[in-house]
Length: 181
Image (cartoon, rainbow, N blue to C red; front, side, top):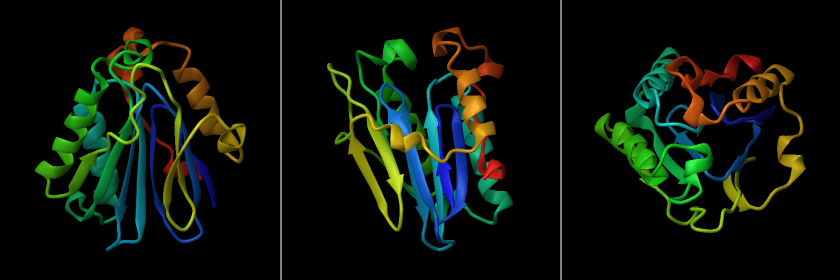
């Protein structure tokens, strides 16, 4: 199954046969978490601190509906930066990443914020991939967007019409795209 996770979206997917990409993590943050116990992958593409706790609670609830506890997750948060985050995310982005890590660890999961994939002063684009294993690549490749669900792509187009600094709480609400795939 081919899945693309865009900005402001998250999803929970069985790993077997999964071909997933989460492209263009630049000034935003990506999260991927594995539940080996349940053979699931969780991905989320955060772009704002606004509503962050509610978005994290929504992801937790979606996991619980599948019988997965956050305590079974091993998560990595990556991307973002200190300077360019003013353009797309709330600043400082590392603060948002640490809030996500703290949420997961407070509920018994393992989580880290990866400094290996951090845009820094000069923005870099990172892309998460899953196909029989996790990987992060640098650069922009249009193929990372291919094979997406059209409703998921339409949601992404609507979301990026505003900058996160213009979001209301309802704009900042992330969407579970799992049912679209």
